[in-house]
Image (cartoon, rainbow, N blue to C red):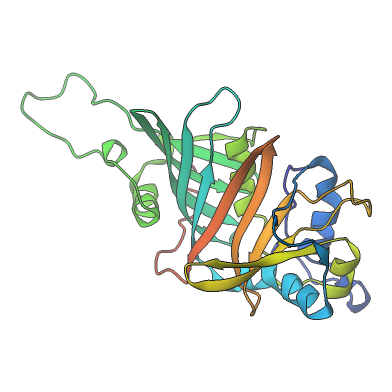
Length: 279
């Protein structure tokens, strides 16, 4: 079982009509949340159960995220455990392909390191900058995409297309905070709306209204693994009036939260295939 709930694949067969109410990110989330702990925000208001309209809005959010792609996303992680630096990933995610490509920047004081990432539900591939090879002709400069600084999502996609498959190192997900956040990016969407009634019964809460970039969003805690108030949801969502998903936060270790911001939708840059495989 993954750390974060996985959404239904876009390519799967549709279930019979009588089972469709049970399909969607809501059911998957309820099953996976038992392994997580997250105290939802909301210091100024008392959390309450959802109204019918709020449940419909929340149930629609995974589908709106699916429709909005390819979309630009930013992942931020604070220092965790013995780590003293911050991590920022700027990426393009395509929820139809369940794949993302991005530039990861790790800043620890005056030291900055970068790595190119490509990931899907099964794992992560990394391409790190390398030093110039020795033995080249004197005074001759070879343009190497892997040694160029990549800081934006669009640059990351272009670089991913340019690199040879052998430059990538593919690995399964670990339990690191970064990998947990990356997996969340490709698991929040679904190819159809969830069942609002089923969602409401799984224990999400309305927390508050909040402004982001001049726009109002409802802040919701996610479904709970049990009905007990002592078993809080691990996820918090910022959802617009029309169901658009703007932000998700998740607790990755005690007291530390990953923030995933969907900062732009319908970007012109698509996500390449699996760049670590031979083309």
